[in-house]
Image: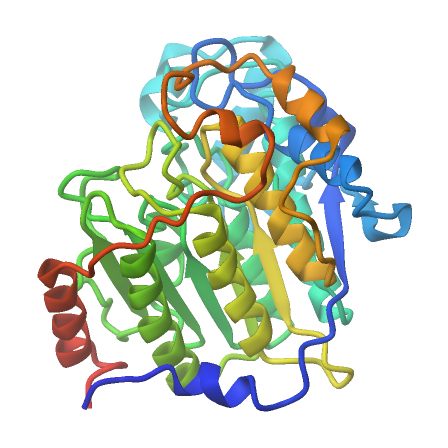
Length: 400
């Protein structure tokens, strides 16, 4: 039997979700991190907040300043040795070779920089704090979070601490059954591995096929875990709007209906957008936002109608595309209708960013004037349809 988006259809027949949220931030995100010539050496959180403010789309009451996670909090998931090494390296101003070899830090992938421990520890507590905000009755957005590759004793894929795993652990401490959705272009391998033996956490990842995309292993349809609590949807190169929506809608409706979570955590990395230099997809901002909107409308809710939803950042290596998209995410979480045309102050802000990597592309000029893109619909290729059929015929949660 093919799964249909029944959960989405059913949810839209009830009252619309009550939309109010808290945005987690910290002053240190305005500092330069990761160093020069690194994909994350670009403005991300600060640029997003500045663009939101250019739209006059946030109030002081909707923002909360976060702090560094304490070692004891990080050790819910990470080893004591690894946390100690991260602190020691920041204090010494360097990474010893033995730490580089053992923990995969201090190299090009996961470089040393000022705030080497403090910056990722702050982003990590933002996600823990976001989980507490959700438990307290509101939605939360931590754009600095979403570092989904980190392992208990190693940095991986630009990720030092696995804040999604720690946020989920905070929700599990409160007895919550969690559905984790990852729409970053890269497989959410670190989070999947963290909960592969937890029968009350389901991880769902739509990502570049690891035959051609990082982490270059895992993330296959067959990788369901011993409990069947991992759903992986590897997508082909150049996935378009129609294909991404087809895959998302079919999978999301089915897992929501069959898993019946208490709370949702979404990793909303923007590297699936067409302009992203590290992604291999071709989806538009509005396709991405349509998926987030579906999640908001179909999430489990508090008694007052507020979705039990935590949204985290993640990948995203094109600052202009990222800031436009995450501004749209914030608008959806707070029920604001933003014009597509970027305000003059926002256009000036974006033009100040040192970014000319794709200035010869036909869509480049639009990045500065509109927060939305040209429609990128197209045919749904038989290759994708075959993958979805295989997923729904073989996965223990979805087949039947």
